[in-house]
Image (tube, rainbow, N blue to C red):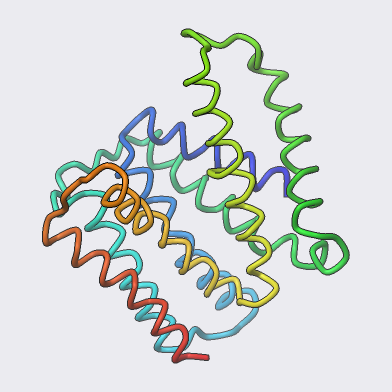
Length: 215
């Protein structure tokens, strides 16, 4: 679990550093494909037709939103490709590996200990107190918000969803992340979006109804 959480986050930021955010996002959201391949090759369980359609819609919708339809913005250096795929594979690991643990312990306990040990490990290579730039109330609140809402609560809810959803279904629904960014930007930042991005949003939303129908 520690390896999965640490690897997914670190690989994602390495991918952004060597490419850009749209490229990293698309590579990480290959997660449903890797989980589908795992269930097919290891569990010998074929995905349903609706699951395949959901994965196609989810990846297409995410790609349209993060690239705004301009696929020339995707930058794939060898390091970025390796880091992005590694991040997605680590996501697969922490989706599949803790199911037995979660049957005995709460998602908050599993997440808390995993993040603690992951933080201790990465601190051996990078001093957490060596922070470039100015630390003020604004930057501190931004960091705390990212820790609480963007990491702790997000991962806890995701792990808890595995009590009710299959790994494939849970991974497909994670593509709601770029959709949420659109909604929040519309509400708080008055950002306008192109028709391409709205098509992507519709494709992502449709995955929810497709998966509900599959149930």
